[in-house]
Length: 177
Image (cartoon, rainbow, N blue to C red; front, side, top):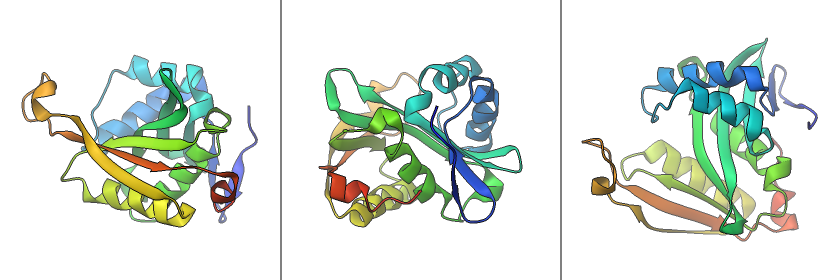
């Protein structure tokens, strides 16, 4: 397990602990914007994917998380699946810190590309992701990924694939989660 990383006075960015999956589920629920999966899935993420996930903690309370995985068919890619911030912690730059922490996890080591999907109307996530590309001084590109009709539930928006990189050692040195 990696050492916690401190920045600022009171928020710690670190790998999740298995039992914290329930708290991650609550953050997703409370955002009101993320796709809420079963609490069991978040417990598995916190246990089995801790090397590609991070949480933000203050005074023993989780305020946010970022989760992802290495793409098995394309191991040079680290995929950011979800990033969520508790409503009381939004608008304070925590998303950028979580994304930086995500990119410094052991599971992201040596990844050349960062990918995620974002709905066309999610301006905050688009700004976070393109801002990270700028901070890393790397390019990004977008392409269609999932059409709205690919999703079984009505009203789900399409998802656009964002890809930034290449993630070089010099780009990673710009990160300071």
